[in-house]
Image 1 (cartoon, rainbow, N blue to C red):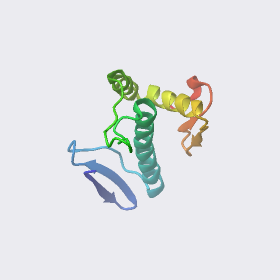
Image 2: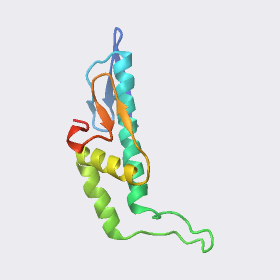
Image 3: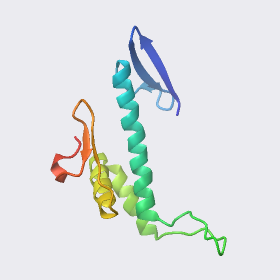
Length: 123
C-alpha cells in the first residue's frame, strides 16, 4: 500500500509513498477509521463491478483447464465506469440490485451509499 502515518497529539494523517504526498489531513482515530473504510469499500466496489461485468474472465474451466475470457467490450465498459467515481457508485448499486443485493450504508458525516433514487446517492 505504501502508506505511512504521521501523528500529532491524538491526530493522524496519511502519507503515500506512491505519490510522495499527504493524502489526508489530520484526523482523530474515528475519522481515520472511516477514511480507511471508504477507501477499502471503494476497492470492493471496483472488484465487484469487475466480477459482474467481465465474468467469467480469468477463471479456469474445470473440464478443459483453459482460462476463460470475456469480450474486450466488457473491459472497455468496466474502464469507463470506474473512471467516474459517482457513476461507479451508481453502477454498483444498479448492478447489485439486478442480482438481488440491496445496500444501505451511511456514515456519521452523511456520506452514504444506498438504493435510493440515483440523484440522492453519495456526493
